[in-house]
Image (cartoon, rainbow, N blue to C red; front, side, top):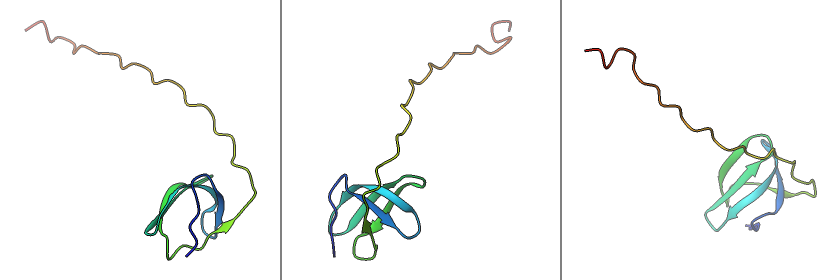
Length: 77
């Protein structure tokens, strides 16, 4: 059983390359470049170390405030 540390770049046969988010004796969590976050049982996953850099992710914008919409005719009753 090989444990990877947070931030290591790895490759997995099905999902491709990704970055280790966390890893312990039971679970390994990886944020894949094209497939999102996946959780694996550490003893069962086969990972290879890679030197491929992580892609640049676009900066997240601020959420827009919700606009309160009043129901039409609610005050006419």
